[in-house]
Length: 289
Image 1 (cartoon, rainbow, N blue to C red):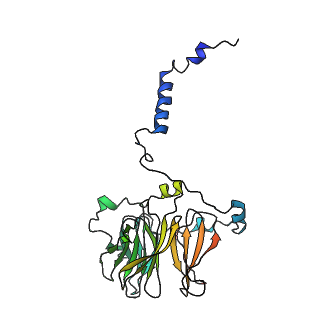
Image 2 (image 1 turned 45 degrees about the horizontal axis):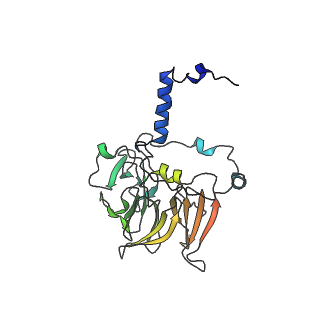
Image 3 (image 1 turned 180 degrees about the vertical axis):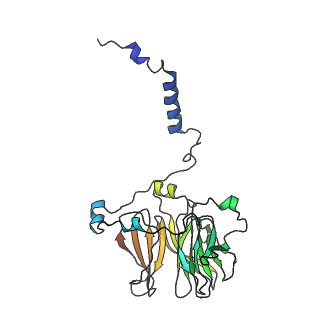
C-alpha cells in the first residue's frame, strides 16, 4: 500500500505566501465580481474563415528590402495619431484628423499646423489630448470637409474654421464607430461604422470577432443616411474606384479587401478582391488606379 507523504501534502500550507498567490490568481481568473476589464462584457465569439497563411503568402512575396522600415518620419511629436490626409481644394494646405479629435491644416514651415475644426464644443486639451482614435476626413468640391469620427459619427465642416456638425444615428440606431469615408461623384458619402456593439474599442471587437459592422451612405441634399451593407467584420477603410463604378473596403478581422459594385450589371454585388497578409486599415488608390 502506497504511503502518503504528509510533508509534500502540507507544503502549500507551510508557505502562506504561495497559498495567497494561488488564491489571488484564482480570484483574478474567475473574476466573481466582474471587476476586471472583461468582466462587464457579454462576449459572443464568432468564427471566421480566414485564408490559410501559406495560401495567402504565396500571393504576397516578402519585401526583402523592408522599404517601409526606411521611410522618413515627418512631424515627430507635432501631431498625435494622424490617419488620413486630404488636400485643401483652395490650396491652403493639407488637412488631417488627429487622435485628440481636432482637424488640423498644414500652413507651411512658418506657421506649422493650425486647428481647422473641432468635433465638439466641449473640446479641451485636458479632456481630449490623450485620445487614441483618429478621425478620417475627405473633401467635397464645395470645400465642405466630411469627417468620420470614432466617437461622434459622420461630421461636416465648411471651408471656414469652425465646429463640425453631425450625423449620429442611422435608422434609429447610433453610429458607434465611424471609421473611414469616401465621396461619390453624386455627392453621397459612403462610410464605415465598424461595430454596433463597441464604441471604438479595437481590442474587444477583434477579441470577440464580432461582425456587426456596416457600410452606410449619407445623402446630404436629403439629409438621410441609408444602410448599404450589414454584418461586416470590422469594416475599416473605404475607397471609390476612379470611375466610381465600385468601391473597395477592408475587413480588418478577416484580413480581406472587398469590392462592392455601385454601377453596371453587378450593381449591389460584393466580391472578395484579396486575402491580405495582415490586418488592413485604410485603402487608397495610387496614380495607376
